[in-house]
Each structure stands twice: as structure tokens, then as C-alpha cells.
Image (cartoon, rainbow, N blue to C red; front, side, top):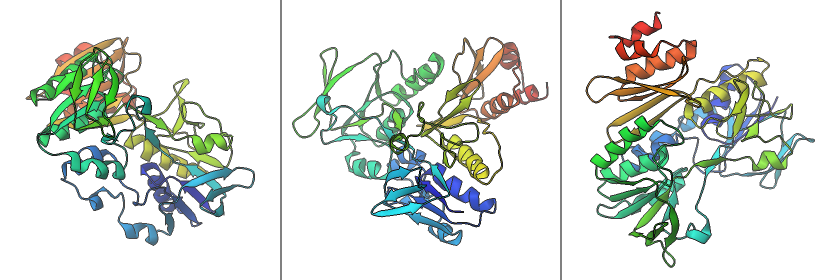
Length: 400
């Protein structure tokens, strides 16, 4: 049985490795459109951009791993079409047959429209190794950078730029940074951290357009102000890469729609990672995280081999900014109450409740709160809010 994997990122690599670990002896072909072997993306906007990590430390596996496990890794080869009828993909001039196909095509950063300066030189996004390599030379002390978007990617890039001595301004159109993903308490904590390091955070600030002839020289704001800039980083979210699946006639619903097993609307095509949406508590979600990419891909690998195991998502995320390690467990959608708990030193955690149900935890430099909160959520256990505030030892909540 030949399994073809389209996409050589975190999910694709996890899927291929899991197939072998589970004893699949047939062919595995993994196709990646980037020239680099499968690598970690989170360090791109942190350690790699800072120069603290070399490219080889980004690799998910040593190069010899793929040969030793008989995974045919084809790099720099983009798939142009899927034919579900003949069960084949077209890559380059070759038609490659499959018995099962896994789409781990990931996502693409949203860019600013060319009409408002998005195509000017000096305007970057952060997603791939090539993206970061292209912008690294811009990070000289004293230079001015504007970050468009106050989400995690933009704030991580802002923290790196500040550490390297740049003049940093973050533009956020919403009333506060992290508004889409975090409570006001977390936004306030992170904003204060950035401001303490000299980052200018402009909430409720709309961008009219970037200015410059061939290269960006600044940003014209909706309120009429013009801010100078030597370069710009855009961090306004990502979109799932669904083009191949859509053209092949697969169902699309906030990504490539899969069932609880990870199977698409075609019985022989599967999907996992940023590009895939799946059933969740009576609805459908798509998670953009390393943990989801690995766990979902490994579940799909097992199900390709006949396990029939529903994917049980356990959402968790993290972000590193300056000396802050922000760890997040659960999904906070629909919360109506926040409980704050002070930890040791500058540590603090915010616990999201909907009624009496614990939904999520944001832990700032508080690994214990994160681990306990994550475990409680996975167990389906919701302590009373006052217990979180008053418990001398959070671990005691796991025994109640």
C-alpha cells in the first residue's frame, strides 16, 4: 500500500513517522514544496530570527532518518493536481498513484493588498524559513520596524526586534492586542511587558496604506498620521491551504473538512494540521498549533492503517516574548468569567469559565498553573472558581 503525503511540515512529518512506527511496510512518499527538509516553524520568529538557532536545529528529524525509515522525501516539488478518480497526484511532469493520500498542506499568511502597499519591497510575513532568511538583514540596531497586527506572531517578532535594538511599533486595528484569542487581562499583561521594553503598542489604530515608491518608507494611518519605517512585518493571520482539495472536489468548511477519523469527503483522502477542520463538541473547528498538527496526524496515520480511532483534540499553545513564557491550555470560546491567580514572582494565570465549566487557562511564567489547568480540562473537571483563587497548592485540585 502506497501512502502519499502532500506537505512536508510538522503534520506531514509526524504522519510519516507514525506510519512506520505502527508497522506500515509499504511505500511512503512525502512531497514538500519547500527545498528544506521538515522543520519546526515556531522558532522562526524567536530563536532563529534572533540568531540563537542554526538551520540544522530547526529540523524535525536528522536528514538520515527519512532514508533509514524508507520515507521517500521529495523536496521543492509542488503538487499541481489531485485526481480522486484515478487516485493519483500530479507533481512536476509526473503522475504519481496512491492507495491513500494525506493532505497536510498547512496554511499561508495573509498579506496586505497591493493596492495599499502590500507588494512594496521591505514588507514581510513570517511563515517559512525563506521568509525569515529574507528579512534577517533588516534587523539592525536603530532601524525602525512597524508590525501590522497584534497577534502572537506579530508580538513575537516585535519582541525579537526590540531585543536587537530596533525601534518597534505595533499597529492593532482592534481595541486591544490579542483580542481574538485572549481575555483583556492577558492582553493587558502582554501590552505592559512590551511597553516596558520600549515597544510602542497602538491599539484601535487602523492602517490606511503603506507608503513608498518601490520600497516601503512608512505607514499612513486612518487617523491621518504617518509613521516612518525602514521595513514592515505583517502578522494578520493565516488561511488554510485548501486549493488542491477544493479543485479536487473535496468538501471545504473552514479548511479541508474531515470526519472524526481525519477522513475527507473522499474515502481514500485524509487531512491533518492547520489545513484541516474536524468535528468538535457539536460543531467544527480548525486548530493552528504544533500540538494539534502532531496529534491529529498521528491519529490519521493509525486510521489509514485501520484503527478507527476518533481524534480527541487536546488544545494547547504557547508563545515566547522577552522573558515571558505564555502557555495556554484549552479553548476559551464562550467564556463569561475570568479568575486570576497570582503565582510566584511575576507569575500569574487567568482561568476562563463559562458558568461553572472551566474552559481554558492562560499561564504567564507559571508552568504549574498551566500543567494543572491542562490536566483538569482533559479530565473534564471544573473546580469552583474560589478554589482556584484560594488553594495553597494547585495540584490538590487534581485530587478533588
